[in-house]
Image (cartoon, rainbow, N blue to C red; front, side):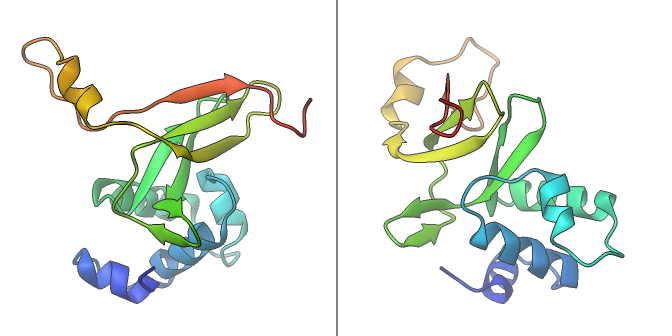
Length: 143
């Protein structure tokens, strides 16, 4: 996994304390986090709007991927976990949403095949930016 500085440089983004902090927080996270969860781990003077802008920029640059949680707020994750490493190249995996507590988890073992995008083409005029598969149920903690 590239360092925060390397990721920012690769994507032609200016290095700021918030950008570096957000990348480090997401890298250490066990599950996707929402903006408020990220903000809680940054210095007290950090503004929520700055965190949202940072996460949106990272999403546009495909450094992170996002999934909407049960509470309808976006959760963000850095790349996808493959073995012991994280890669920002592959975000095409399923996500699990617990209907009880709202926890969102990446399910890296369930890949979305690229052929699925071509097998069922959208109606004329539509463009698919990325596929998303959401699995709903109850997590082990809520069982």
